[in-house]
Image 1 (cartoon, rainbow, N blue to C red):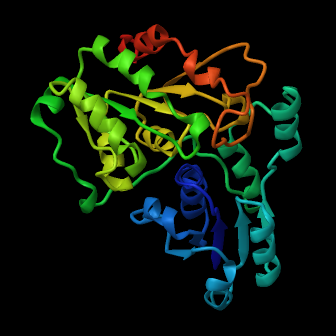
Image 2 (cartoon, rainbow, N blue to C red):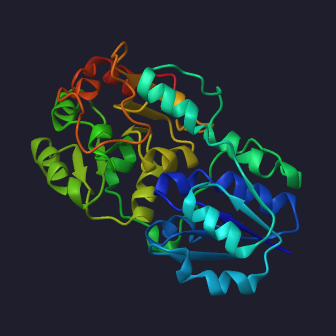
Image 3 (tube, rainbow, N blue to C red):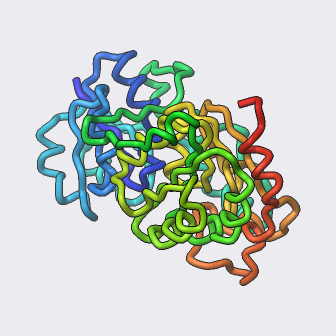
Length: 321
């Protein structure tokens, strides 16, 4: 028997499905297949709980013929949008989905009225497989590294133990400003490794040049898997609300999360790992979106610009991790 799990968008969203993947593989006799977009599939390449990963660029028609041949017993829809609904109809097999709470999210974003359940999205994912008698195992997220993900970390950084700063995010309103990094870095004694995408390479170089003795830039240089390797050995990770936050959680790394336009109440905070949320309180415009925006709708970006550097430094350097 085979089951197909669907989650199309974002690295972080795919990582958040890994407890479902693991539980399905370990608690049932199903062969687990997964469908996602091609650019996010690398985070599942070495996952031993998955038999096949199917990918699309845009439309389900790209793989529909192959999926029909698999003759799935069930479809687990962890995306729950029009595209996944069309696939459910096309395959014609019993399908289960989770409570997406879109109305509650809309109320929080537009009227700041929080009617969301106090549960993580991973816990809500498990409601989609409850009919199959699949239960939470309490083991957190998974990320499996391969030989190609290994990175030569400078010996001095390994000996002293390093911090990882995640630069950038998919949406501007989640990104930690350069000026905040510039305020924090000079106060820290530990070496720092920077990770991020090509868009953050220039920022990383600027930060590294300002403190070359203790900051090394990997932003725009490494693959997702190599960045994950860097994260896996960090003493503490500083990150915005982004996919690398969830990868850090998969490795159980202590994490300091700087929240911009989004809020932990949306249910996407680090899952089952030691972390500290830092956010600007009492801003009437937060959250301005459930995901993120290209620019601050109010034009002031206070959710990031008003962050306390001292609070962040205290979180990074505390002795209770």
